[in-house]
Image: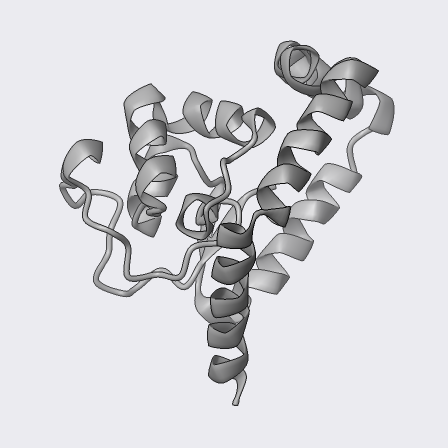
Length: 163
């Protein structure tokens, strides 16, 4: 389940949106995976593949390289999120969606998910060797001094917001 919260009142699904190439950086804080490049980390293929399938190759490339997000209504229109929820109702909407998924027979739900994502999983982390390669690449980025410095700054900003 993908759910974007905090949609502003003046945004509507019918409003025209600029092309992905000209989409300005989002004023919304990006979740860590969407902001990885801003921290010096490359998004793994198991993240970029589904994003590319939802928004298209060019928009995905731009979003990952510039660490930007789509405005909520645009994300909904492109299928990058399943629904929008007001800021105060995100957890409730997510719990309701999880309950809908949980109400389906688990074996059929899992088989359907495997049919849709199996090729991506096989290409990216489908074997022990590919999983080890993905893990080694991820840890190499995380251990680099540049990424560690970026993560420190990011965590300091998050801590300052909570104060």
